[in-house]
Image 1 (cartoon, rainbow, N blue to C red):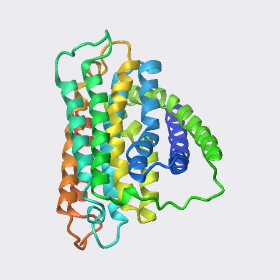
Image 2 (image 1 turned 135 degrees about the vertical axis):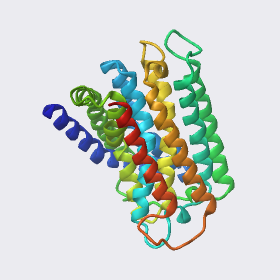
Image 3 (image 1 turned 60 degrees about the vertical axis):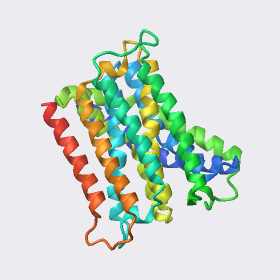
Image 4 (image 1 turned 180 degrees about the horizontal axis):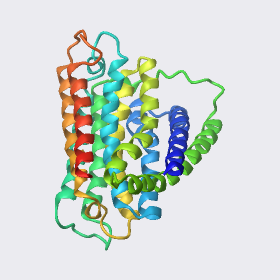
Length: 333
């Protein structure tokens, strides 16, 4: 148990520190290639910061053979990403976080709800329409809706002339495209290596503590694989880029559901969502509720003074996160 816990902490620490660099160099590569910030934030940054979830999911289904760890990690990461919004709000002075971010994030939140609801439907339905003996129609639907979502969000942001369409990064001019690519690959290798070992340590912790794979996947795996999102969002917040801080988290949630489709392709024992525990539906409901609260915060978009550390909307998001963990813990005991 102690060995597994120590190994888990080491791997999670590696993901945190290298994940931050991974996001930085991914952003530099996007700048060198002439990609707009909307495209960088929506596609490149979200996919880069979600790399640990992707690797953990694939290793969970191929090495450990656990559909529950893979599903719990993805959905738990979505819940954790939304909880990060509450943490960010603590460091925003005077005004609420959502009042400083663009209301166009409503589109990303709405698409996220659609994709997560589809995942919940896949968990709930008693049967799956098979495309192959192990790939279901739900996974194909995830890919189609994801591609549709990124196109709609990107077009919506451009039409509304949001701040994400301009480039205002201040990267050192000495960092060339070749150097950025080299450093990106090196950091990605570390993240992949650390993420490959995480599921094994998580499974040991789940078995020896009796907490269950769904709970461990949602709490420990999800938190550790979401470290890059946390690092990028805090960095964006410190530089005053509130849209990047929020957009990275919402975009990562959209990409996370695509990861479920990729995990299903690698999981050859059956259909991923059919093999995963129904308990994961609790996280689905939590993500939908938390995202809906965030959308309400964006739509309200009133610049009001905060009376406490958290605004009402981010406080409610934090409450839902805590309730989600308590319910999962109760159901696993």
